[in-house]
Image (cartoon, rainbow, N blue to C red; front, side):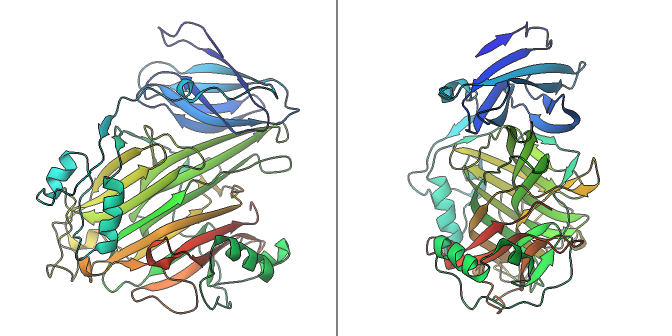
Length: 477
């Protein structure tokens, strides 16, 4: 590993990296703290992947080289709040015998506040006191046993509380639902037993990949695939789920760029959508002999652009948890009838709580909402995989090949039932859950009818409610 050129004046740098062949390898570079960077190659200077440096100036992406990949150079354009941009050079070569560099050379020194594991539940502390010590607000253990168990699981682990700085990504949108014609489809009679048998059962149903183009379940979307709730009794005010960040793969004869976002959200209107999740991006070069990938966490509040959590490094295979809920500034939700009946003016914030339980990172953020009752309408709750919109072209991005993915512990709350009832995601067996109208969305290209991704439920005893969401990828666009 080599680094040349003077860094003291923010000049252009040259980085040299040798990576192993046929392995997705983390590339971490030291630039200016909080710099917004764009990775590109001279082959295609218009195709640029945004990378956000953290407060230590570390910018990260992943790179995979085929055995026959030639040495090459990538460019990293660095922009800071003051000063002109700089174009850094990243010279890449590979060695089939090379062993990946040790983790400590690739990960920034921790400067975040460490929140220790909570060994006992201090029931006498208020939510504001818990928050001041770095712990999430505590649900009532009697009224919300499942949510309290989730709180205990997260509170009993040590986390780095990351700097809540976020960085806007102006060229991408994880936007609104693009509906296609409803599918008249058979329902799976019961949740499938587990992930392995679910995939085997799906292969039994559709032994040839092209048959996935035919309708299978409830409905279709041009950009979403997953579980889509509408028509709550009052309004949805809570969504939460866990998942493993999917690996995305590229190769020869694939789109130059593709992406897949996995997220949960509340709302689906131009000014009333709150969502958060992970995004996995994939760019290919030299006919797939180099594959650059970027994994990042984000929050989004329409009509604004999504915001990357720059101090929250992410890799494929990391386990993440996302909670979004409406409450006051102390994380307490107040209901009109004490324990239900709808939200009140006190519930003036949307909370985002993100955890990377693999890297032990925690991010909290709040968005103020107007206190008048007509400013928040939680009429939908979503558990989704999406192909984002590329605003530089105005088109939906190709759906990155994630093979399969799952989402566990999917839960939502309806303000009418308040803290008396927390609902779990139900199977797509043709019946409706206790509250709301449930559709399972398959992602379909409306122009061609090609199925891109299929979502369905699987039985899993370790997931809240006994079910998880399962996705299968089948096409890019």
